[in-house]
Image (cartoon, rainbow, N blue to C red; front, side, top):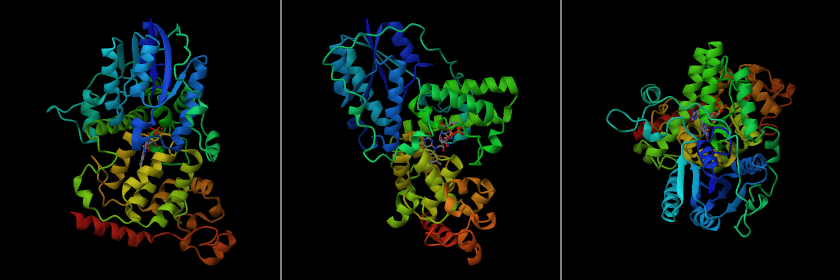
Length: 473
Ligand code: FAD
């Protein structure tokens, strides 16, 4: 009996219910398909492709070199493989992006008509969107009741299952259309990805190590510490969760275990609620397929956005002249990740001070984040822009100087990513344009040369944004 397991956003062997079922059903043919056609405008960005390259490499090693890779339309490749291998079963972990759901139901229908059983299970979420509904049957639009009344009153997340103890594999056949990893062409021609290499162990083992390190040293103090970008209180699990190199159930139960062992009630409760924000984003996307493109609050369709593309380039390159914004954008470029508090600051700056449509930020993040996730990215941009479900109100505009003074009080984070300002005293580090000339000289800073003048006046741009918002309402 041949069982094809189609790996997608579940690039792991542990706690993978669909893979485990496939292993019980027969000899497995593990496959991955790069299907840019079906993804269309949501084809993976550059940082994601780099991560995927590494993830497939490590998954293939775990599978003893047996992972078969394909490139093209999954709607054609999967049925062809079912015939070629005379497969009896096809398994996968469900995905929730609108384009994937359409494609997957077409494939399931097709192969079932061919007489092949499909095994489609949840491997990526704690609660699938349709399991959490209000009493009236509709989806939640506000996070707290979604989580407290919906999720926490529903079935508890399943206890993780182990890697199947016995795995038998189907021998690969000639001419099955498979290609090499290099032929997937996931790495960029200009090797900008090399700086990412130092920051991540892109493997299931790496995910487990990141979880263990966070449980040991990050979870205690998480609630108070998670807003400080220079402290180690973020788990940095987001790319592993996105790619399914770790399951949310493994993370949820590890946190519960830490709570049982050490009584970190407040921190664990807060950490679990952050995991639930991921679930909420998926619920929003599931019930609003236009989430990545259209504001959930339709009135924002008529907002007076600005399009000063020089400022957009400055934002992307971390050259806005606002140190905390530049530090965040450079962290993103160098590591493929940005701390959550700083994501909120740079996003607010783009959407409110520079008054760019949030989709420009969403697209840049899509291309540069290793955790770029259609649900979390679009829900978060809408949240910051004030046009999403349960969003921060538009008129609440972050002041990036005050945010930096509060959350990077010693300037450790800014000095790390904006070294040209490192010698400035803290008093001026967060707003170098206010520093007297002799202090700038002593610190070796020439505004407009070694570091830019601010691309906007923070006060004026704030007022402009508020006026544009007022005109809308
Ligand atoms: P932790 O604090 O350790 O949290 C654990 C996990 O909970 C995270 O790994 C993540 O899966 C989930 N989580 C935490 N906060 C959020 C949140 N606000 N929304 C959804 N899930 C959350 N997250 C992504 O995974 N992909 C994205 O593309 C993405 N884009 C974002 C864009 C903007 C403008 C903003 C403000 C936030 C975005 N986030 C995104 C959410 C959040 O910033 C990251 O999930 C978080 O920084 C990841 O770091 P961590 O794993 O150390 O988080």
